[in-house]
Each structure stands twice: as C-alpha cells, then as structure tokens.
Length: 157
Image (spheres, rainbow, N blue to C red):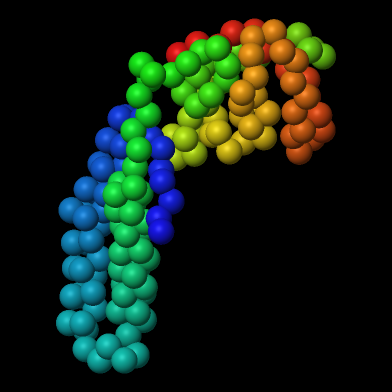
C-alpha cells in the first residue's frame, strides 16, 4: 500500500511540472546519450553506455516515485484549516522566551518546505512541538543544539 502525500494545489502543480520536465526533457536527453554510445560500437565495454543506462534507471525510478506521489495525493484546502490550534498550513508566530525574538513559520508538507520562505516541514522538531498547541502556550522544543522555549503568539492562515 502506498503512503498518502498531503499537498497544497500549488505543491501538486509543482510536482506535475517536475514530472513533465523529466519525461519531456530529461528522458529524451538520456535516450540520445544511449543512442550515441551505441553508435560508438561494442557496448559490452563502453563506459558511456553504462553511465547513460545507469542515469536512465535512476531517472525512471525518480519518475516512478513522483507518479506514485501524484496517484496518492490528498489536496489540503486552506479554507478548511482551523486556527484555534496549530496544524498543517497554519502560519505560526512564535516568540523565543529567552532572547525575546519572534519568528513566523508556515507549517507545510515535507515536499513544500522552503526555509527561505519560512515554510518548515511538519516533520521538523519545531513543527512537531508546535502541533496542536494554542495561542499563549509555551512549548519546550528539543532541537539538535538543545531545548528552546517558544511562546505561541499568533496562529493564522
């Protein structure tokens, strides 16, 4: 049984675009490399042929993974997201209780995480520690460098 993948509409679009690129650009390029290697003669001792076949195998495996994700995707609807407690797709503003700095994170599926945009995966220690908490709660979260206390200041969409 395949694992369900939760994505936003934008995340699904990005995944489909990646698959399309792999099928229409990468696959033909590798096929061309294989053809050129075959033209050079004996393929039993042809390193270029072996490398191209390996690349083809890895590409096909990557495409199969993406196709499986698309087949088992569940779209997250922002209009149905609750802000009474922290959950996926929420923007959470937290204050570090020690240094009083504030940060805002959007909790997203793993495949949509982008730290530059303050989108963190729900699989991260910070996101896991925040899940299910409410505004005003103080949460101690264990991260690789120690324990940080965050106060949840705001939950929005």
